[in-house]
Image (cartoon, rainbow, N blue to C red; front, side):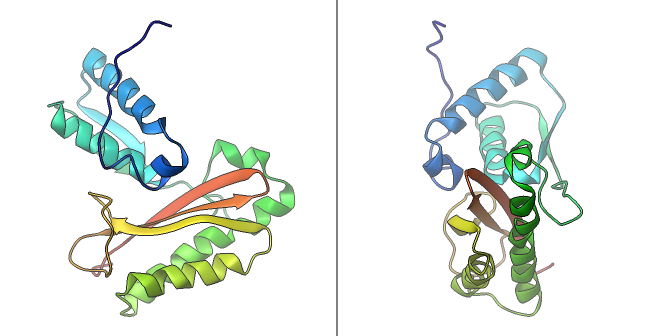
Length: 184
């Protein structure tokens, strides 16, 4: 109630989800800092689906000197490829079925990289075209950024690139991502 101390991780929290949900990562960073400070874990596990949260937590762990190894676990998916989320329960059965286009589009981008595409504008267009072909989908963002710094990139280079999307199906906003690399 009278809480007035917060942890804010600059730069990493201003794009992607941070742009859509101002203040969200301040809350995440503060809660995780309190948790890590209280229990001093050796390991902390976070799902790849929340890639920006992982980048924020890795940075705060490094900057604040926590001796905690952050372990990223793969995104758990429904049989259709839709990333598991509590938000999925709010989708109609038709929206839930059609939302599988998100992962299909992300997979197509991965295939394009495997086949030699390096231009992020082209990769974004592949995703935009596929998701945009679904009338129930409204794209919030498609972003390709450095996986560690979340800085914009123009090509797939030496560093891993995060391809992240947010898509509305009705009144439900879904997020998903894949990591793109020349070595995939």
